[in-house]
Amino acid sequence: MSRALWSQSFNHSSVQPTVVINTRPLERAAPLTEHLQAAGLSVVDIPMLALQPRAVSATDLGLMRRWLAGDYKALVIVSPTAAASGLAVWQALTEELQVSDKHELSTKNLLSVSKAPSHLIAVGAATAAVLQAPNLQIDCQIRQPIVANNEGMLAMPEIEQLQAGDKLLIWRGLGGRRLLVDTLQARGVHIDSIAWYERTLPIDASTNYQQWHQQFLLQNLDRSQPLKPIVIISSGTAFEHWSSVVEEAQTDATFALNYPSFLTLSDFNYIVLGERLAAMVAAEQLDYREVVDLSPTTIVAAIRQDAL
Image (cartoon, rainbow, N blue to C red):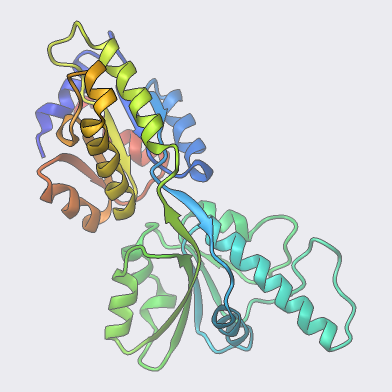
């Protein structure tokens, strides 16, 4: 990574604020965008992921019933979306059991369960907040890793102590990183997972990018070396989508006719989450900074590293 390219972003900060492109899904973008704007950065939201719910299958319901029966040592919940989806099914199954046992249902809108059947591990504060909502009645401490990623989870006592033959359930989205799963399976731990949603390319991603692209080029006509925008990338899927959108703008005939100059992937600096994603970006010979989490303070510190 070239540190000089990052320094350039701040040498002219008094003239033009650094442009940061937030590619997080709309459901998760606002806190980061607001924090970056408060820090004096010019932020553009161009989501590269849309979270689409998946139909709940009979297999998913079977795994949930096994978890409720106490078959798993722990439940790992990787995102707020996974937490909300899993909680809805948890509540429905608990009420179903109560009806079959001829018990009265609990107060409406309260999760009708007093104690979780295993450890609950939330990856990140936003995920934990969903599980700790005031209208829930979960008698269980929500545990979080010190660092909100797979490496942080592997260091947790609840995960570190899992042995061959133990079972772990994961609530997640389709795809995603496999470090936790691969490490535990190599140890002989049985892993089951429920993918409550999938990540797709938003239908307006290309349009939003090209509109911003045109505006950026017009604003920098008089600059021989415009400041490099910084792109926040949170997953391999988001980077693949970003790459396709940027490359599509280069091959769009109408766009090329009106704007013979265009930005390529190398005309951006990148902030990327974790080693696996850093390796993907490095393989494309792009300038990047790796972060261990996506908290707003971590992102600002990465952007301003050369300015300290």
